[in-house]
Image 1: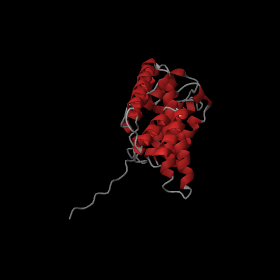
Image 2: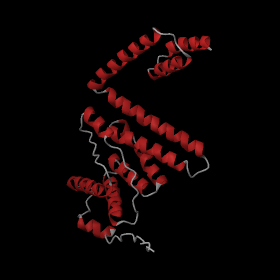
Image 3: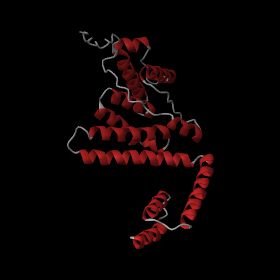
Length: 248
């Protein structure tokens, strides 16, 4: 028989004090130090994350949208006792502390790593602190979108283990809807996508016109309602519903 091998968590010998000394942490007003901590955070992210996502407010809307599309966070479980995981969490917390809580990307990153270690409620608190921040109204668009998305996923995860399931599901839906809405707003700022939206409208009108040329079945009418709902054309929906009733 094969003997099961018990995995022993990696012991982290780096203490908070030795980590401070190693990176010369002390003067919180030192701008160079602040950037150093952010670089350290990014290095720790490489050790623990299975994706690359470094959004910057200096990017154009096109670059921001591309970053968001490519920023899917893989839910890779992490061992909270792992040395590198602890070091990454330490880096995130220092980045947040040195910015007086204004480093929203670091708060988001901390939330994600907490979520990956199974600390869903603690992670949710981090995501909500991003979405509730006044800074979320003036910048960090991709970070805020990601925070709403991750908060929604946390609510759905919590709905599996708590009695008030419906409440968590409803809150999760609100967060995810907000994430989609903000992403759509960001997309509308890109001229290339504006032209694309025009083509979509033309295609929709052509489709509806083709449907009108043939006798409409009940299912076809229902499909038309779905199309009109997608483009918020409520006026035409009334006519379609009346036609649908006559078919029944």
